[in-house]
Image (tube, rainbow, N blue to C red; front, side, top):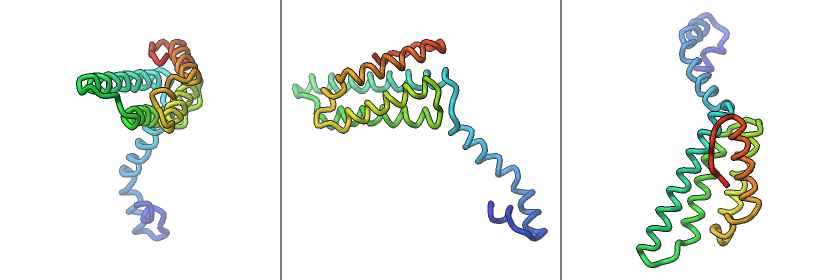
Amino acid sequence: MTVAACGGDDAASTAGDAAAPATAAPAETTAAAAPADDKALCEQAGAASEQMRTEFVKLLTGSLEAGAEPKPEDFKKILVGMEESLTKAVGTADSEVAVAMKEVAAQSAKAAASADPSTAAEDPAFEKSGVALDAACKKVGVEVNFA
């Protein structure tokens, strides 16, 4: 469509005019990828936190029932999921909330890359990033619990 819209002849110009409604769809996609407001970011962060907690509980419960220790790769999968979820949600935003979310995502990735992700997730820097995100979200009226 873009090629037809950029053409120089009258037929291409008519095709470009007919394609105008179709070009609105990419604009909507771009808008969806644009930075969200802080309240929405915090709500997404809260949902990601709840998802992570649910997955940890399932992992630990399953391991207890099986009489085995959880595997590092299981913790890694959960932490990678957290990092990806937060990174996708924050997009290109650069507010205080966004910066805090990016730091939690970075700490999640760092822990996931460790040989022992469970222990790495207990790093004080990880907790500090969660406290900062909790505080940033509280400022916009959203309670999350990363710390």
